[in-house]
Image (cartoon, rainbow, N blue to C red; front, side, top):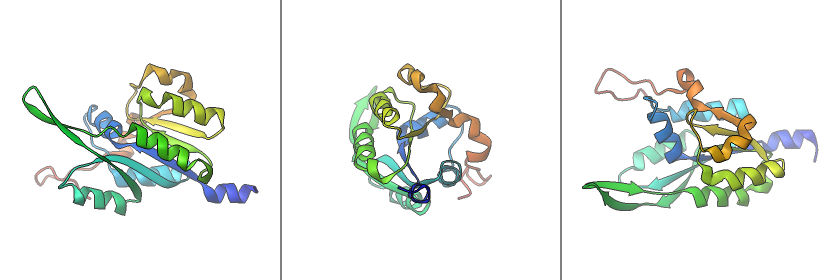
Length: 177
């Protein structure tokens, strides 16, 4: 394969939306997903960005906006359960993220994994061994100790807050976009 073909093929991002969203929010800010998609394209030549997300009825507007921003959504059914009298929703996307990363393996040059979850250790290890790992973007400086071995691939998203933070308006705390 010629170098130009490789460049055209580009990289794919595989994003654990729950890990990303909760990790950023734990630092007191909200991610602008449109800016994040542009960042992935410009910085890492990401031509496809798979966003793994639990499907919740009533969130159709969110899903439409994410798709308009260039994400390919992979939905996981969610489960509702009670914890301390509060209804919680669980939609673990780990298996889907691993599966799609492997299904698409021959379609991309490098994989950009967006999660600090140690459950992806075996995937990251495989990608590195096969020269398919681009970067591991973690929401904060805190990530699983299982990923320390791959520290030279890790980029903390927390350092990008100024350029990726969702700007809020004064009206009811709604976002601009």
